[in-house]
Amino acid sequence: MTLAEIERLIAKGESETLELKRSTGQIKRVAETLCAFLNGKGGTVIVGVTPDEKIVGQQVSDKTQQDIAAVLRRFEPPAPIEITYVPLPNSERKLIVFEAKFDQSAYPFSFDGRAYQRLGSTTSIMPQERYQQLLISRMHDRHRWENMTAVDVNISGLDQEEILRTVRIGISTGRLPESTGLDPGDILDRLGLRTHGEVLNAAVVLFGMNFLPYYPQCQLRMARFKGIDKTEFLDNRQIHGHGFKLLDEAMLFLQRHLPVAGRIQAGLFERVDEPLFPVAALREALVNAICHRDYSHPGGGISLAIYDDRLEIWSDGTLPFGLHVEDLKQDHLSRPRNPLVAGVFYRRGLFEQWGRGTQKIVELCVEAGHPEPEFIEQAGAVGVRFLPSSYIAPHRVAHDLTPRQRQILQILSGNELPLRDIMKGLTSPPASATVRDDLYHLKRLGLIELKGRGRGAIWVLVNPGE
Image 1 (spheres, rainbow, N blue to C red):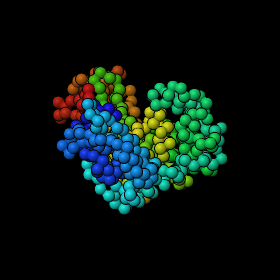
Image 2 (image 1 turned 135 degrees about the vertical axis):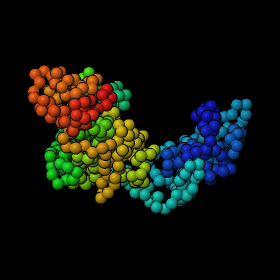
Image 3 (image 1 turned 120 degrees about the horizontal axis):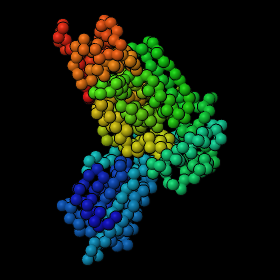
């Protein structure tokens, strides 16, 4: 770190990730703050700066360095802290920069037998309950289901083409080096999906081809219900597959059954149908379900349910340790339950590693005019519920217009006309009663409306050109 970079940091003032100290006479407080940074997002302590943010540096002797090394040995586990000595111009003094690196797999850290946390610009002792949560989280990270050796699966039991497709996409997105070869075994090693020649469970989730009897949890349940409860199915499917296949199947199911919102553009022959919910938001929710779910339960899976008034996506497992439902709509750390699986989805350009996926879902829905989605955790599962801006009646689902109804919409494009003029514009017009039925059908769909009464009534498009 250069002096110019340090000056820019100091100018921002102390924060959740920056602490300033006068000298190593405060080395115990420095260590406590570094411990707090290690248990949070990481951070930097700069020694040699006065409380009014003036850079003064300090003398750094052999004893100073020995004292620092002795203090760092009092961390448990050994702390990933980098130390840089930055000389000041025209002076024998130096700044000492301590950088605590974020390492989720190792925390919680303690110093002198106590754990610390950072709240804003304040360092304090971590509550015992929080410390226990982080210990459990560390145990999970080291003994994750995805890290275990796959049962009765070797590299020949994986989808070779999907593995190579991952490399092609990863290189094109800049998330895999161009030097990545085409040997499936080497690719698995690079992605951390094989250890000592043994395929891991994460590789089965990502590229597996056979899932029974050992991997029944690699399952997707999809249903289109009639009405607003689970009383009657219109379509019901269950499939097993690797993560990318499940994502593709879910998107196809949505394409077949998702309600559409129609609008008419002036000059077009047909109504423009757009999915009720933003496709990108739905894909993000499905990817989150695949990457964050708990695969350790053989009976688990992912559920996609479409009702007349909402859409829900559920996955088995609770939220990552320390994360709550209310956190999902604000900035939060990315803590995927299955980082190996999430890492491959990241390289495919389907997952971001900054914890913004749920915020992105909210933003896309609000931009489309819908209420914010609801995030739910209950009965050992996590779900997201998409709600439309208004109730979508069943006849609005994937509704097709007849050629004559489309011609009526074209005639009304840019015009406000009575029935008799609409009749004149039709090719081989039927009886007026038939055309009137068409008009009222289009009105029920919300595509046109009637203005006025009697002989002076005219038909117009709803929001033409929008």
